[in-house]
Image (tube, rainbow, N blue to C red):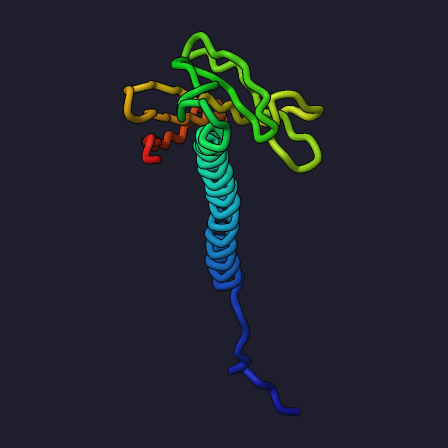
Length: 162
């Protein structure tokens, strides 16, 4: 009978060390996965806010352009100085205080409206300042992200170039 004494095998200590190394690697991958999901949500909100801000500027631009089509209208008719909430249907609400933008945009059939069915995290305020030859338009979109208020601001100058 032959007795093999040089049998190679893993010791308990080696198994524990390998398990620890694999666990640390998986923990790192899991952390990266969670961080990617957070960043993706942040980027989505910034993209939506930038588009809502651009839409706010375009709504005011459309009103200015339509004023040119009506004989006798000035370019700034129906665009008084002040802070407003507009939606693409041209619903308009006055906004009294910058810190109290109570113009929560609602989601209604894939559009963001002032009057709608489902609340969204976004608020939009459009500030119009008439400087005689041009309108200074500042559009601010605010939203809450994990208890932190975020905002996206865009500005445009609309001239009476006609």
